[in-house]
Image 1: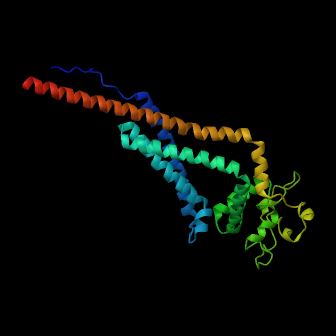
Image 2: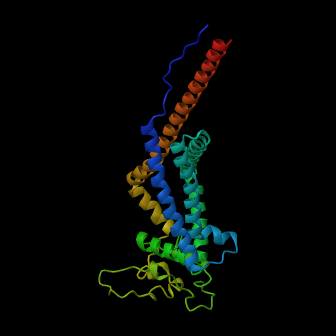
Image 3: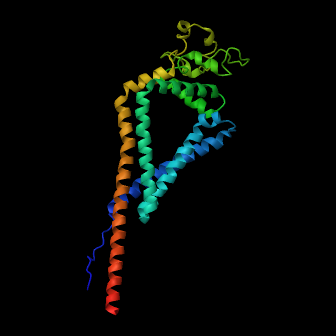
Length: 281
């Protein structure tokens, strides 16, 4: 008895392989850049991270963690697509799927408990305020945020009392002051930056301080900015989610094609073995 099987073994789609490999290379290069920036920023400031708060508030650590994670994931995606490695493709698609689910759940939870989420953001911002002057990256981020959103402090400019340098009981020359990034910039201001414009404002009432600094808290200012740019943020969210969905779909299709190829190759090998046994039998 002779067994027959189609000589054509299914092939893995080279176009899908190329697409997955190409985009993983792009994200791999991006992760290298993020990791390099974070490492450079960390080494440049010669930071001494001794507490958990230091680790949480240090932007350089955050960049290195994100860069390392994306680097490892894209490595598995690149090699898995190029070498048709089932284990690597499974790991790549599983991590992407878990990441996507976590992002969606987190977004839904933040939407449902927006009040508690704002409280967490408020607490974290106050931690950053406490770390101002202690970490150069934190200082730059807060200054940029207060200048861009035209705000001061978390909920109010009085939040700067939480910083040991600006607290009114401090012996620092900056006692009862706020950073210059809180200051209101007028059109007729000179091009020379007045870094002393926020001195002594914590002693003033809000109406008086309003003439010199922004008294609106950054939490409120950022919330208003989000409401005004919902379409932009939605577009950015889609731009983040779509590549992950595409990556999951392509990797799953490649996995099915590789398994089909292996299955048909095994069947063909068994049939050929049976044919040889019958010929010699």
